[in-house]
Length: 267
Image (cartoon, rainbow, N blue to C red; front, side, top):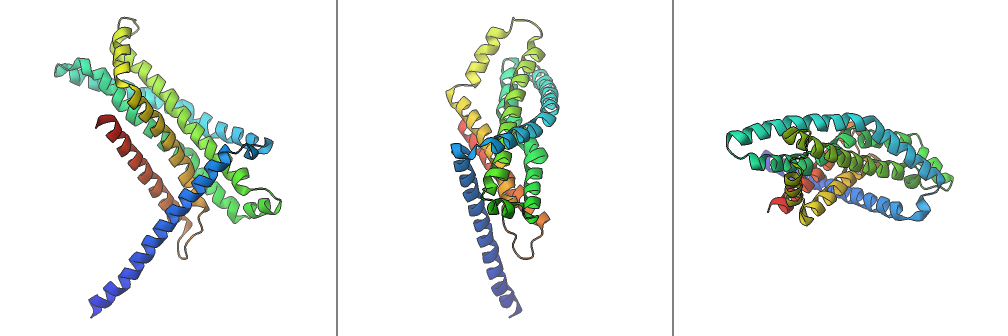
């Protein structure tokens, strides 16, 4: 009897939790779509919005650009050395540099750039937006005839996309250059072989997948934390728990995108 009552009570709770999960995802996707439309609308980019975008793009990119690039360079040198030495011991040295490029440039650097931007920029920006909303900033903007999404949210979202793409692009170039130098040194003798290997790795399909993956990574880390911070809290849910749920959503999307890109690249 008691177990039956427990099961009967648990079912509505599970159903309510699942419904809340679905509603939260729908609202995040809806808000992301709204921000996408606003970003493509010329009327959104008046002088104050452009100024805010420039400010956020600088503050979200400049402080972490040098550090992430140096970290990527160090990781490139370490992984290249390990892979080259291991490949030589098995007589597979002709595949070593290709493996480094595939692992670093195709997979690790875009994912690392997205995670760094999320942890250093977009998640704190989401917390800042939640604070502005609690203090009545959104209500004041709406009362003044301004759209809070355009004034406060849109510049932060576009700045997050810019930061992720910039970090991934610059670190990928640095990684490719250092991988060549780690194997061939400061000589032009390996340029022909390196160019052929690079063209074999980055064919049309892989290049398109790499561009799309980096772009969708930037969308995920820029939209989900900001959208999650603007969701109305369920009764009994703390803001820390809500922030954690947003973080879980973002990691889930990144995981799905990475899995899809792996399938596209290797199957």
